Image (cartoon, rainbow, N blue to C red; front, side):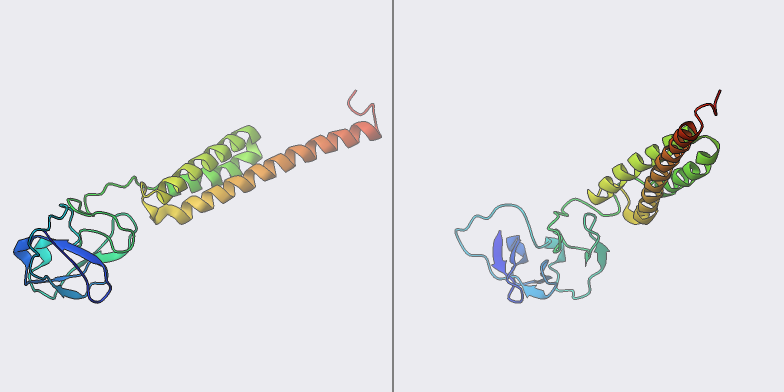
Length: 191
């Protein structure tokens, strides 16, 4: 293994000895770096920061999104320069993210608002379900296990669910207050 530092950014790079003399893009800054000759007697670990396939001298490089952080990186990168994710043996197209449920959560939340007028307990159940699902999904999106494109819908569903629960609690308190006022002002009102 050959280990060297990028002259532009100082990042430590490693590649196989057969790539000596070739140029490759630095995984830290993207600038082209010439791979130096191997130093005799140095045994480096097997991990690679420079993809041996990229050491071809070709300056044209394609880009892809990092499967962990979503930042744009070179297609041949073996490690994300933003989050440090190891990309060896991993293709971003094969990464399976759970599909988001933003539309479902938003629909449940809106349904809870509608159902509250007909049956408060059903509206409350839908609101609680929506709130719990939204919280779980947002956590999964933050951990990179779920498609983050539904984050806005999921947040909106959680906000509507919270508002619905507050409105339902206020409605119950207002009803109890109304009954209490009726009983205080006219104790025989319900006889």
